Amino acid sequence: MTKGPDAFRTISEAAEELGVPQHVLRFWETRFSFIRPMKRAGGRRFYRPQDLVVLRGVRRLLHEEGYTIKGVQKLHRDHGVQRLVQAAEGAPITEVYDDADLFEDAAPIADPAKRRRLAATLEELITVKAHLDGLLHQR
Image 1: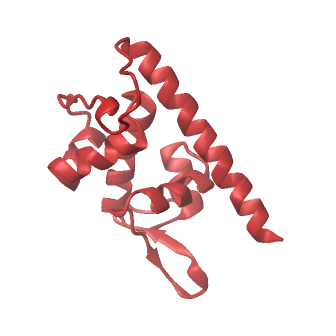
Image 2: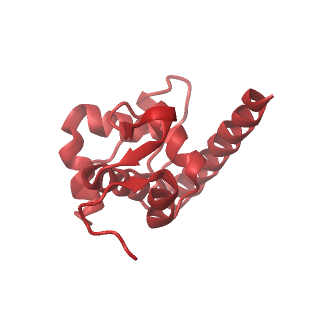
């Protein structure tokens, strides 16, 4: 039996729907204050339909548009959650954040393809670190 469009999703259902591992959703919660699923007794996460829309926007910005985590944070700070919803709906991304202003010593990378590859590599490294941190805390 499939759930209706207004039903809450568990973390496993949300992860499957978004095409990302569960630990990535947990990691995003630590980096993005606007991602706050409901938590029930025992800490089980339940994602509302509007949470999934915002998560789709974050996923698109990070995985398809080459934004960094700091870039998505800045976009949210400057334009609010509505801009993330628009990203989820496929609206064109008009904001261009040069992350060089976020890191004083960083040299800007002009080639968009290189920026996307670098951002994807960084996201993978952050995901691996979060996974390793989780394993360390299980001890």
